[in-house]
Image 1 (cartoon, rainbow, N blue to C red):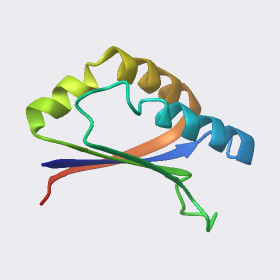
Image 2 (image 1 turned 60 degrees about the vertical axis):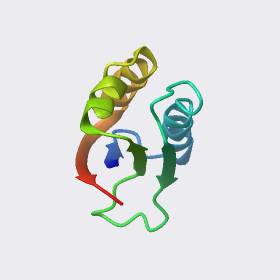
Image 3 (image 1 turned 30 degrees about the vertical axis):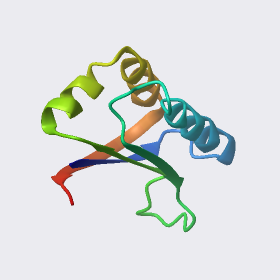
Length: 96
């Protein structure tokens, strides 16, 4: 199993913008069959080093991760998040 985590810091960090981005990410739920788990959380501390949104997904393998990244729904979500983000960091690791 592969766990894929992305942290997003948005250009516009107001609560409405954060909620919209969260909903865009959650919009992948049920539309990409490769996703075994999808979780989206928003930051509650709002410190200077905080990121605004965390995306956590789990997939069966690295090959499935590649298929997810090329899925049309993910591509549209990625376009939105690329335009909305100031920065992003990611980590992918083998899990349980």
